[in-house]
Length: 254
Image (cartoon, rainbow, N blue to C red; front, top):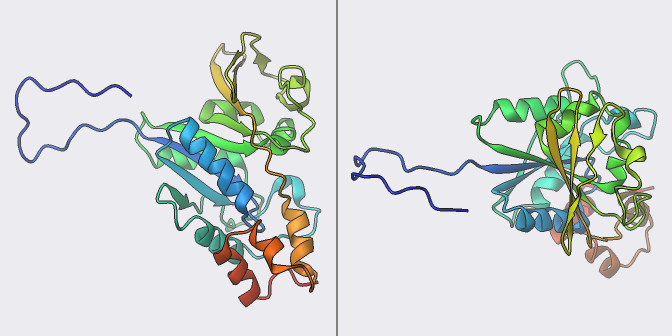
């Protein structure tokens, strides 16, 4: 980033120094449990987009998973997430998607609107998600608004049907009221696309390639429920503090 212009005269001692607008990414998900793949994706985004912070926001109730088995209690998932990110000062726990008073599902669009209301107008917002989550984007509440509230950063997944060409698979993940510009820009690890809405607003979407961390939370829960899963195997998938928490609170037992 360029340096701010030097003032023509010395500032008064009490004047606050000029600051660049912050770059903040919201990283939502079940985090059931938070694992090393989540951390690796967040670190990659932090570096690639020079983010000031990544906010990990465990989701209390996902609208598209209401009929599935209930997740681990929110308080446990929030506590595990806080432990997982404790060693990176630019990571923070966010409760934007904590349980609602009316017990209704949590919607990403609401979380992003609250996040924007908490920060100065010039703050640059990003939303970090996996390619598997992007495939469900057309089904999200007010999905077409989300790219205009926060720039989407999509992390590749080895099991994603998006494949290596998100342009070709756009009909699967793009909300139907948005148009995709064909003038894609690509580098060794990032594909940059733009979408446009009916009001001719444009929004950026970035795909981060090469982040094929083959860690599945559902597979992890299965391993944690098995009494004879080697500790060493789990230790390569989970932060040690999270694994200790799971063991001490007897989580994920069959």
